[in-house]
Length: 306
Ligand SMILES: Cc1cc2nc3c(=O)[nH]c(=O)nc-3n(C[C@H](O)[C@H](O)[C@H](O)COP(=O)(O)OP(=O)(O)OC[C@H]3O[C@@H](n4cnc5c(N)ncnc54)[C@H](O)[C@@H]3O)c2cc1C
Image (cartoon, rainbow, N blue to C red):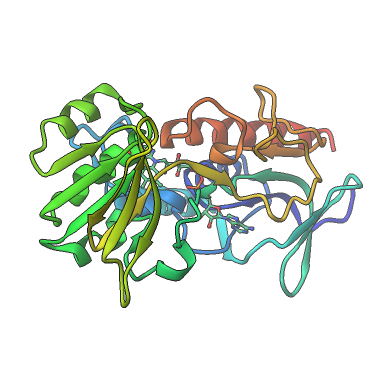
């Protein structure tokens, strides 16, 4: 038997990692889950989730995250707060490098999720001063104010609707002339008096002295430019994989998402992937938990033959 600290280490405590941890703990593996922030991942910044089966009224992202964490820990999962800096996957025993130490494990599940894509419109300068990626966190700051939301997918439309609970007006800027979001969300947004759509348009910049005062918008068909007077700008234009620590150690697609087969096996034996960080056609809580369950069972089979 090789000398390792753990049978399995999981990176990331979002829905994928917490589900993998639940299954691995129930399989009585010697497992550790590493999370750099709070357990829950992106659902911690999601106001309300109504498409996760089993909760007909929906529930807050925070509540769902807590339920997942409690359930996994109840089964014996150990969660440690630590950021993974790099991996050494060149031998059978995998090494996970943290800030102050390394961990040796037989197998690994990467469930490090994804982060919102930036547009390069002043995010660094105006973060916390009007630009945000999280309506749940920041919408209350914009009570009775005007805000701009950018994007046309599920997240953008759902979060724009949430913003209308606080803001007096929400401009939804989308680069096409129709939304990509699920029909039920489109219907709600189109019926919402507080949302005004700015079609075929992109945001080119923001300005303001102490915080945002104006959002510059360009119509991509006519090239016409205008400035919307607004105090907030919420960006939901897609996500990027959290894979800085990989440094080429497993195979990814052209955008950096990790490639896997149907058993969640990556290009490296004993290394599995689950959730939003995977090259997958749908990034949702339900798909992340499915991936997590499969990855844990695959890791269990791998460990049996280690
Ligand atoms: C605003 C918003 C609204 C959404 N609404 C819905 C919805 O209504 N329904 C739905 O099904 N889905 C929704 N989603 C999508 C859903 O949240 C994601 O699909 C899901 O959270 C993916 O889970 P995950 O575990 O793969 O990754 P994440 O949730 O991204 O979790 C990954 C975790 O890994 C950690 N991590 C990353 N790097 C490291 C590292 N180096 N070391 C240690 N830890 C690390 C992160 O801190 C994070 O906690 C929404 C997303 C957003 C942003």
